[in-house]
Length: 158
Image 1 (cartoon, rainbow, N blue to C red):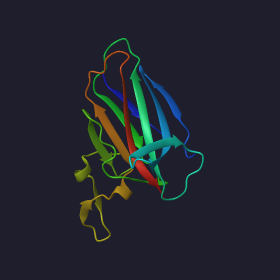
Image 2 (image 1 turned 180 degrees about the vertical axis):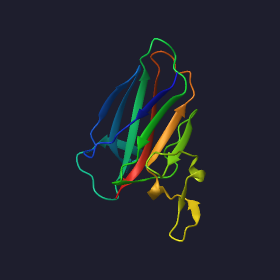
Image 3 (image 1 turned 90 degrees about the vertical axis):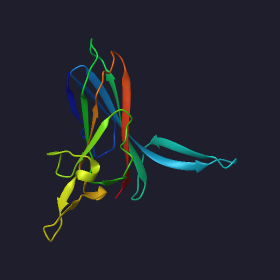
């Protein structure tokens, strides 16, 4: 079985509940900050976004559950990278998945080092993080009945 979910990001950075086939998913967007405790330990804090300003780090998360009556295989989850943010390299990795990227509005996907763009002189080069438009995760499965997973990527507000 193959499920394809394309998550549309709301400009207001609100949560987006989805139900596609027997896979349910919910997207959240949170501001991520760090705090240093009195003992010197660093703690990462994620909080609901009230206001954000350029330069702040935010995390887009997608939590999914297999609501079907059978295990699911080859689940494909795609999230666009909003133009209001810049993707932070290395933050989309998820164990036991294949992660691919697009720099052409989701028309084609490739491994990060294989996403190409043309420069002004017509030369082919690797797309920058700023030029990425979508991230796609393929979860090979099986994802058992009722099992859940989570994936995410971080970005900075432009």
